[in-house]
Length: 304
Ligand SMILES: NC(=O)c1ccc[n+]([C@@H]2O[C@H](COP(=O)([O-])OP(=O)(O)OC[C@H]3O[C@@H](n4cnc5c(N)ncnc54)[C@H](OP(=O)(O)O)[C@@H]3O)[C@@H](O)[C@H]2O)c1
Image (cartoon, rainbow, N blue to C red; front, side, top):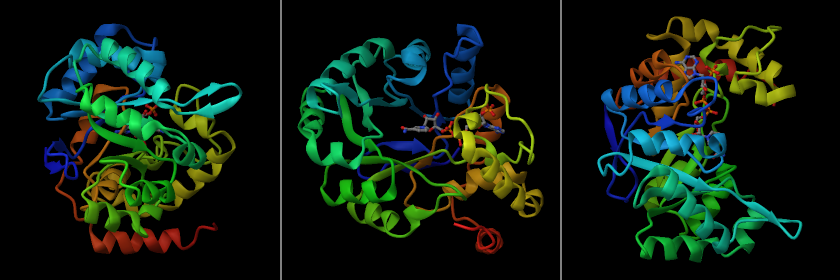
């Protein structure tokens, strides 16, 4: 496993972390999920992305059991916006309440990276969340203030306003907008970047075929009407992926790890073999320019 600096936080994170949104799903018992996280740790994964919302807190509970209060492993969790008086918002009060519950489930004294969970631009500009995060940092309940942003534009806004030490972004072969300005700005300001959805919910592994019915157990099914178009696009990448060392899955993961602005990718997994395959993608970054040109040639055939 290769490790990278998480911006200026002082944390060195495994470049392959673990997205934990499937952890604790009732489809398996506690032991199964404990073993999944234990295997990731054994393979060198040292950072885990979860949220109060994942499995209604079950994901944090698994991490509480396996990671607990260890200070050599890092937890990134999130506070979600709530609807109060018919207004969707993310205020200090909401964050203070959420963090206490998360700390309890995580069996931890402190959350290393504490993120707002996909706030929209209006919430970012209107609500008093920034003071709330700073207060929690002063109190030692969190170490670093962060936002899981909805778009590169929101990420740029956060960096320009100096309100986040870490951002979680979507970056993948399908979603390259962070390359336009966000990566340079993040490097300039020492903001660490966690990359979610490197496999676009599994679609970029090439495991789904056009016109195939996708079972609801796959996260990809959440894409609903967008899914057939995503699968069609993944299909057009197959000839490039099939000759890539490690195949389409590794190509998608190593694409995510390519830019040096990226601190780590946080692929989700719900099987030990998936964790093992994802960890094996760690390579130190610097995506092949030749393969990138081939991918770009395919991307040029896609309609916007
Ligand atoms: N707004 C937010 O804050 C937000 C939103 C989305 C995600 N996230 C974070 O980002 C993490 C990753 O996102 P994601 O899980 O949506 O997308 P992803 O990492 O692109 O895809 C993960 C899914 O792909 C499949 N998979 C994983 N490894 C595989 C492998 N080696 N081969 C084939 N299939 C594989 C698994 O689904 P199946 O086995 O079901 O096919 C897994 O659930 C999440 O766990 C979460 O921590 C945050």
